[in-house]
Length: 115
Length: 112
Image (cartoon, rainbow over all chains, first blue to last red; front, side):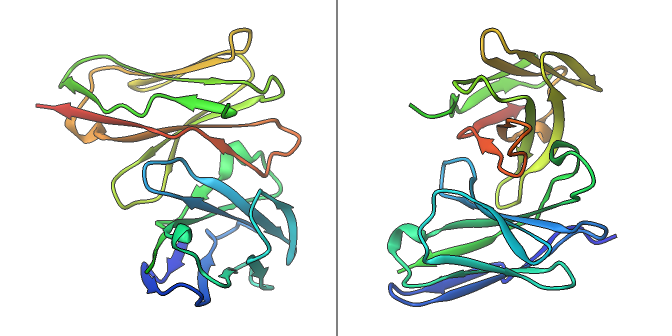
């Protein structure tokens, strides 16, 4: 059983560019959350998708947007990249049928470097 | 003030030692408390979760929650070099359960 998978593993972009990160949830999971983890910091919640809609959003600007597909996979898009967007982007999947605390699984992350 | 405070370490201990990792928080609405382990260049892995106050034990790991003090702990007994990682505490209020609030993580190194 594959866990949460993310692609690409690493990415280098320049300021002002746009980036799309992808996530496939663990089998049986229907909810995807995205987190940003800066170096030496804990993950910060960006937003969550369930039933192809954004269900909750953290304190991130509109440059961060997402999408969930009918197969529950998800994309994170970041426009007009800033140097400060350099971070590890983590996808976490869970089941809406059970407590988040019990079932949230994280992927390995995509490491984004903005030059 | 951050909602969740965690000493970033690093914490260096000899193999076999008992390790104590701690977090404090300010939001009394938090009800679910979790500990994640994150190896270098990997995603966080859920170690333990606790609902409300009390203790929970799983093998060499014990999680404690003291809601009256807004203080949570993770104890690792008989620490091993393979326990060397960053340990993140996380919590949520049980209403907006979709959003985990993390500490900064404590880097632990267990040397042989």
